[in-house]
Length: 228
Image (tube, rainbow, N blue to C red; front, side):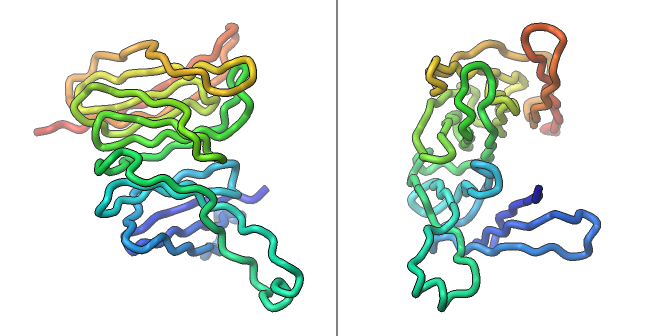
């Protein structure tokens, strides 16, 4: 199984590295040019390594682009093109958080409960809003508002059940994604608010581990940054 890593840079390029041999001195990578006028801010894989969602910032606001494998070409065209075609844009959304920049993108496969196994992407803006997207179709699945002046980042548990957001205050809010019997996202509801930190800036990351009980446990790792 191939391992891939993706990076967005200030030069406006998206680079996808193939990491089959982590001990190697050099890695093969695919370079993708983003639409003109777009400055990349975050990236997340969608549907495994075959698709990538990129967040960008332009003068008009924040945008999302999903790149996937190019459609098969006619036989007479493929004979003249020995190299594999570059990924192409499958869906795009503009001004997704108005003019606010997207700070983080996080994607995971929804496997909890009756979830249908689709990829869920969470885009976290520098404001207070977080939007959930279907990674394959680009459809909006839900949104939440942290009501904490401004966000720092948001993440999703690996099974697609919980969303956690670190914002301006010392609290971390956690929401649960509710799934319908047909596997689609039914809604998002707040389930808890974690308190106890003495500083105002937090970074959170999800770790998931199976539990001997009938439900899973999750661990949130926090990094504190003092304002002083």
